[in-house]
Image (cartoon, rainbow, N blue to C red; front, top):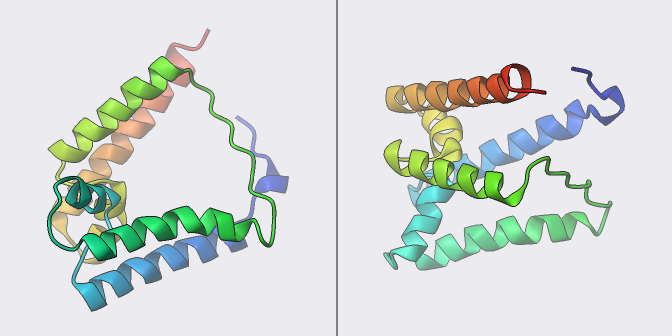
Amino acid sequence: MTIDWTAFTPTTAFAGGALIGLASALLLLFNGRIAGISGIIGGLLERGTGIGWRLAFIAGMLIAPLSWQLFSALPPIKIDAGYPTLIVAGLLVGFGTRYGSGCTSGHGVCGLSRLSLRSLVATLVFMGAGFATVYVLRHLLAA
């Protein structure tokens, strides 16, 4: 494995992480809501209460990269998988999100910041599963 040090951008990564943390803290502080995308979209699909803030949250996620283009080009997107792999991966993530009562953003960002033991366990499980999957696919099954 090699690291492309020219693409290593700790300043922007730190700023992005700080913005995610600030946004999730403000949503919890002012709305009493967790910034977990699965719960936000799930609430829209169930047509529950709070449709306005959910739509605003998702609109912000869609508008952010468009706004970025005003200042700089978006980074290229490269996906090293075919459609069948992406479909299976998406279904597994969806199943895991429902089974774990939340997604990576809900548990990893919001739950850990609230010192939730359930979120700590969930985050350790999905990170461990991700590490194991990459190891098996890239090192044990690699041709």
